[in-house]
Length: 259
Figure 1 (tube, rainbow, N blue to C red):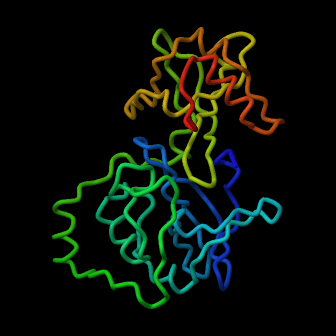
Figure 2 (figure 1 turned 120 degrees about the horizontal axis):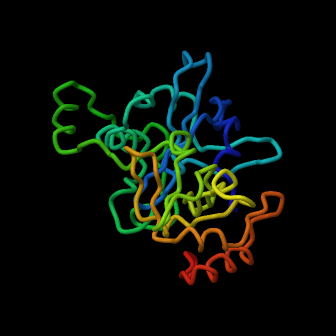
């Protein structure tokens, strides 16, 4: 199912034994556009600590109950590596996180999730996860060959970035459209209404993005302003179906991600 990532904000995270907290933000990587973590505010039960939840552990999303179900327990989350979500997340910390839960490392392989296109990984039985060596010297040794992962980004931070075509700017990022099975960001939702009379909301596929300029807060695409202006309008009141996606890709003469 394709959904706006902002629709997950505030959803409860339901563990196998109790509620963990609510979704505050979403982290993605700007190379493969995979959603790597949900940032969850735990509330008073864990001293209002924020924790990361990987799609590897997500069993499903219940929109009626506004709940994300995960295959974790409260104890697992409480004892997980403490990651400061207000700082850049290093590959070292991600490795500790993956090792603790027994997940695969999504960066080890050619596909969106390393060895495959979906976050499916055999989870070990409770209590069989090898402990992470948290001694300062061991942490320093692991950090020496794992620099910061500069490609891990916050959806909240990138919202509002300008969209620049080959000839000029034409809108800004309003939201992200993700696939909640592959947990991949498929499109940027772009609002052009403040940039030209008669503006509208349009979608830009992430594989049409050339780069993101973090200094200038700009998303650069090889498309022209006119191409974007003439693209099919995105109507948020209607389901985002394959018919619209097909028309969108035909307009740009681009190959679809599902081909």
